[in-house]
View 1 (tube, rainbow, N blue to C red):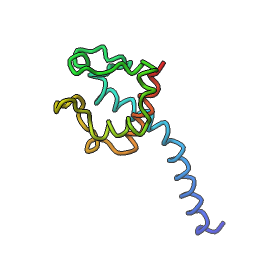
View 2 (cartoon, rainbow, N blue to C red):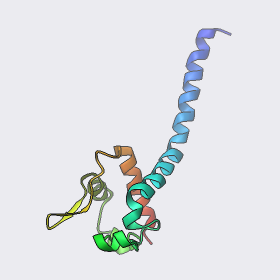
View 3 (cartoon, rainbow, N blue to C red):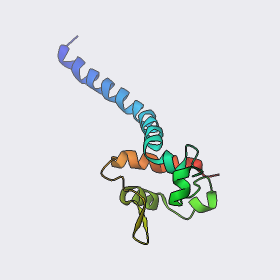
Length: 115
């Protein structure tokens, strides 16, 4: 066996394993990020039935018709830039806290709440 040939194979196998784990890792990251950054207002279940959610006027994300009002890109933009109403911050921006991949995973997480 030529030792030179084993390195690319090992590298390709390692890369394949890393890529195969990516969706699961993103799902874990989305759940963790939801709990850490979103759950206090929107609740673990997306219903926004929390004290902070009521105070901020957070919307029930399990409401399918409400969710249909927004594209994934619009949700992503809200996550990045935050939400203000009449000059008052309703949701802080996360573009400097979370990566684009983490934000996109949160968009997918939001979509899982719609009924």
